[in-house]
Image (cartoon, rainbow, N blue to C red; front, side):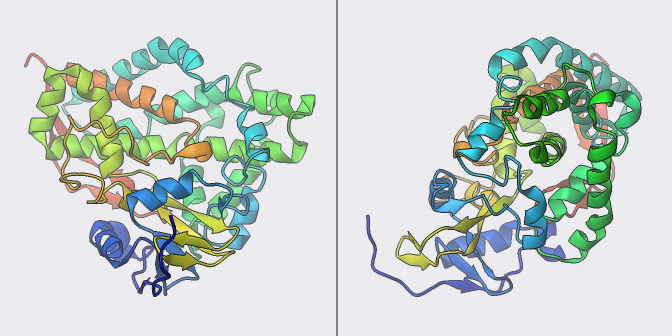
Length: 398
């Protein structure tokens, strides 16, 4: 369908400022009203804030390319080359195939019992305390344990993983203070990947060993090993950590919703999907247009940086009824919190498995969740989550 060419909508909103990152939703709502594609005057970039254009762009890697990186700064995008994030088919297809069998539903089903047991033990210990930090003592512990096991890392090699993930995502935005403060950690991450996450320190049946084995077979270039490991290490942890933390906060803020899930455990999955929609852990990634693109009569020039705002799309009033409410029966399976299309999150099945294990353990052992101290928002250029969430829980049967 073609449209008459319209004037270019513009906005001076800075989506990476502290104020907006604390509470992005008023700014995103304003952008949705401005237009389906908006030129950001604060940056050399565009943003797509509405659901339909975002989903269409995610499905169109030929016009909205990831091959030059999915961040804003070219210098950091160069660090992503050779990863599943910063590539398009056919290269992307070959890279993604390296771990596709380990992330397939059949492989994940074999992990279900072990992951559930880990969640039960961790949650039981926290609930027994009565009061704990749902981020530092639960959400930030569980995914690191699970992913480190799957990667094949020894216990002593796991310590720095969490700081690496947060720093890497900060570099996906502009070179602001957050990105600059993250640079030393990014350097440490690549040093770690080159010196610690090497075959002699890895279990031969783990993810990391599979990446090295793929290079040995010639399935991928040797130069792709470290970038590929960096993408899987960061993406497989930080989004899950923040997804779990965000959901616990929503349960604490909406006790009726928590009780609904406790009464109907089948709502665990839909509740997590609703949390991902409402508080998308990954707020959005950039693409680069390969040719002029028409978005409902607005032309985005070729070679433009375009932010696909998943957070805004997931609250678009044109798509969702009562979009700013946490409705555990909504089951918004078509949200874009994990992306969509060929670049849909490769580890989303694992993230869902981990989240449902944690929340399943919570609803069985905690009769209530209440906020017991001021939640601390963690500001990151791309990821939305919490640094701290003190909660008090009621133990089941007490």
